[in-house]
Length: 283
Ligand code: P6P
Image 1 (cartoon, rainbow, N blue to C red):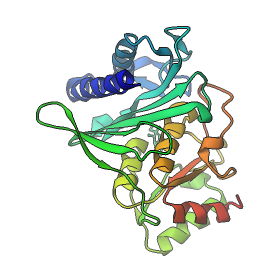
Image 2 (cartoon, helix red, strand yellow):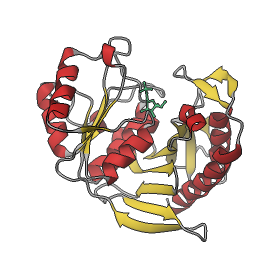
Image 3 (cartoon, protein in one colour):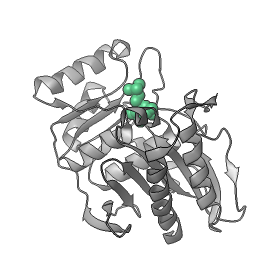
């Protein structure tokens, strides 16, 4: 596991450097969920694939930017599911973006998720790593010697004040629209950039709140990808004392994974906000 976490640190440094000067144009392709692929998406995926291909304990790679699972070492036990550059369409306006990693043991199921991490490429390069279940995630920051210094353990507040309300509002259900309005009526502040890594990082570090990307009339299964976006963040949030749901079950970590590029409605936050959402959704 340590060599995988070290590889995540290495690729985060390489991708953060690449972002600064790379060509921001689009490739000729779309990924498996229909997003137009930026050359930077492909480049970031190549950086990660090259680094992880050196590690004998990795059985396979599953990437938002690869249609199929990439088998590496048949008898190894770790499967890494990752989004190489989440929010990449915002690099052209210089917003914070990031990479997301889920480390699964033997099978791509929530109960096999043994660690999770994400990087944030912003004014500073930061990493959040949750090394095992039932252990608090930790924040790391790249120091002047190009080493990741451990900053602190992350714990979600019981209740926050930030509301990151995603998806096209005209497609929201009446239930969702009235629930989100009730939070704003309570004085919550809108904080939504369009990059889930940055939005979830802010809520995790700034004392809590709610991130929501619901089902909508045009996206009934939501937009965010289960294996390499939703489950890694659910693992990190719940181990930080937060809560999650898909609006039907009690936790995102009880989702049944049926397809590699499966999407789901998803809600992450402090306990108070998720409890309020669950009662609004009759979970
Ligand atoms: P919308 C970025 O493309 C992403 O996958 C997530 O990082 C982000 O939360 C979401 O899509 C934003 O989607 O529909 O609000 O632009």
